[in-house]
Length: 141
Image (tube, rainbow, N blue to C red; front, side, top):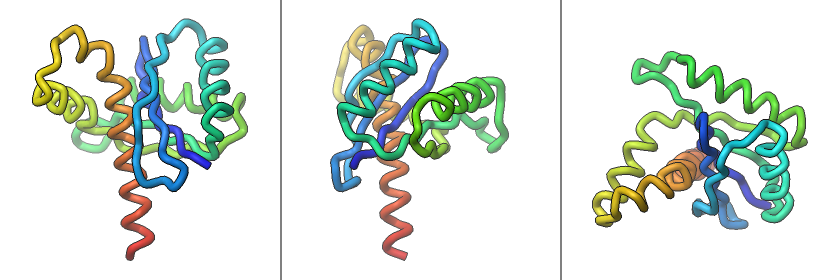
């Protein structure tokens, strides 16, 4: 079974999936948001294809740890996911994941156009990898 990582934005949803053992995250796609119904349908297809058993969504907190308007949108969409996909959803603090994704792409010398196309997928990968690492650290303790 695998874990699905999501970076939920207003226009796109970055999607990553773990390997079957839950060690590494890999970006798989960016969903262009069309409607809640179509977005959920695409997420359902991905969950079936990858045999997902848990979903991890990034929660965009302010730097001081408070929740802002974007956090509220993400939480609302996660409630819609819960209502339509029968899988547990975990929230993961995503502060600085998009910054880290941009930095990695700049270091890889990707063009602005290429960065724009994959930043959400990379942010989802960072979110999921952070979650996986956090779970591994809990097991080691």
